[in-house]
Image (cartoon, rainbow, N blue to C red; front, side):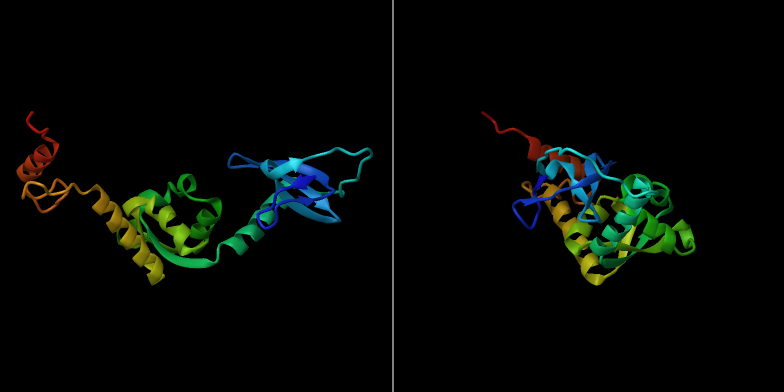
Length: 200
């Protein structure tokens, strides 16, 4: 097999294929290379030749069990940032549909007793501040990050930048349509002024 790796343009490997795994729409090949079991992304295989002969797969090898062990080791290497999060009860029940399985397991394992209003506090592993910000912001107002401070600050800054992006410009001297302190009449008048086409 000729294979494209992130660190090297191309490498060649002689494999003993044990099976294919589909995860989140991506196929992976689990195979033995010089006696060690490795995992390869199928879409990164550049060339594949089938040789004559065969091989013996180890007796008792369980592809599903191996894959779960592989994911646990992979997540332990990848998720190095620890964050404290407070989660609303409405979001807690929906987490399996909204987050990676490793994060859901971390919430289930570390969640404390419900606070007032049903919110719970848990500790989740994350890859980095940069990658965590969009993931946590996608969960909306039903999650809060007390720590680490750097992650909380970056979320605040990103949320403020998004709000600024969508707040209409004040071109009439009135409060903009995005000004929460303006009256409904002011907001309607402001948006009407912004949308009004110039006279011919």
